[in-house]
Length: 181
Image: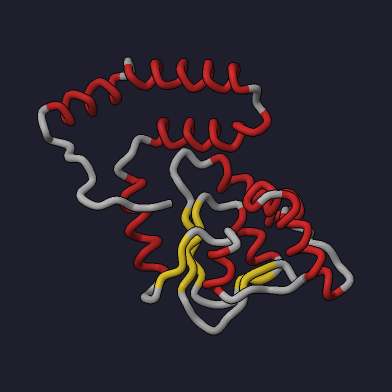
């Protein structure tokens, strides 16, 4: 368990986005690891996703009781964890346990997203992750002030200035297709 928690903490601290794909069962600790990732992509199929520990007289022990409520809300998480009933990929997407279910290979979609994220600066991704994760625990005025300060910090950074110039000169184009996340 300590090793899994250290791995999860490492995922959370990454400046870049962490994308987890599912092409087979993601139950108990496997799903708890996925909850530590920024984005979860499931491959449509005949397998289950969820936290069945209550059915075994246990509780999720690798972050599930803490991360699932932050993902789908306390009421929905409580119902899911207490019932211990895993879901198929499409139902898991409908309930917010995964971000997207694809009919093709989940790894291909995960790589597409990872490639897109890798074109962003690690600093901006890290700040975005931190701001979003802390949004509900930070008073609005304080969150807005922190957001503004980090925005200005990125605007005047060497990398920020260079990327804005490149964008203005059309060396960096706007995305040709939107990616819903």
